[in-house]
Length: 372
Image (cartoon, rainbow, N blue to C red):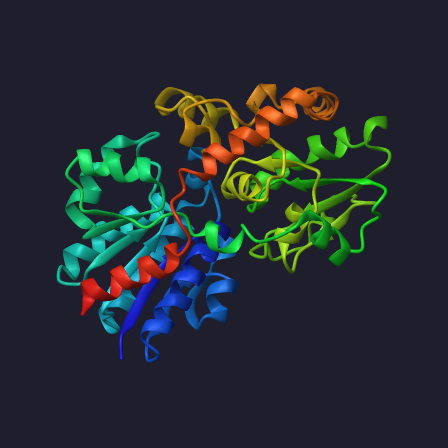
């Protein structure tokens, strides 16, 4: 019976890890899982040590404020591994915590193989982390071809499996999603995706709520996708009158949309695969923003644009993320047919760079073949 210790610290990691776990179970019915994860991983059999809702923090200042808690989780993980030795450890994104814990695990349990699935964005900033990866990670399993080439150039053992979203997000029709949600077929639909973490929501959602008061959106259906890792309903903190919250399957909120406002992160790529036009938004604390501007080595915030090294999706970042700019970008899209055509053509080019379906299955096979 194989045992895997898996760590995911946020909503997107919970999603990717759950699909990997499903494929591991198909290959080995006796497998068991424990570690850190969310509701999707729990459905696949994860016994989680901590509720990951408390771990979803980002930004230098925000992490600093939660450092005591994160350190306590670190100790809990290390103590657990000493008492319950797994056959392998699988880390999912979440680099601030995962790279630090990998270093400590290897020092006390050097023979346990450590796989890293969903690479941290070391190619964007903190390239110094490559030394930690070389020393403490046995194999990187990456989902973008440019990551594979980047790691290979630097002598890191890496496997490219393609993007798992190709299995989950490439088979839907907008009309079917709208019918399932019982939306008015005579109205356009705008979806708000402020983010999966509370701090992202607090930074992004107020601007969105002000923007939809503009007369342009009077005849729109408004949906809001709430990540399943959030333990409280967003409506407890905000007045969401005439806005429908989608929680059980947030993908539906994106599938049904004619347009969406999306916080920088995994959902931007989901939108591309669903052919949903978006504006990407990002706002953080002043301290975190200044530090990011100093160290980031890529020209764009959104993965769709990073993949192409070109501005395909409009980005409203920090001081440029304003109510007026949000309204302007949206109105411009609906009033400009050439812009619509250019965006969707860009989407097709992005999709062509994501590999072929079956990424989770290939990742699972790679783990098992390198453990047994």
